Length: 93
Image (cartoon, rainbow, N blue to C red):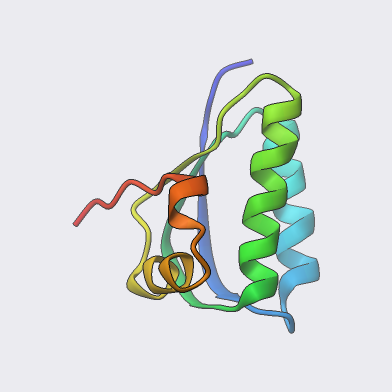
């Protein structure tokens, strides 16, 4: 299964998380393990929880999550919740 980049965008908050969950699940099933988070404009704990769940799902498959090009709000939220060490975001300016 080849890796593809899934481009994430919009608000990753409790109000939109169901739609993002469906899309992310489909992308992972299609082979994506690299997530470009530069298009995320807002994120809360529900959005972060979904990213952590995606990482765990990939790890169970023997794959790694690659979180690239994180937007400022994603970087801030990861740091605030202490998740930057777990998700290992790569910042591309």
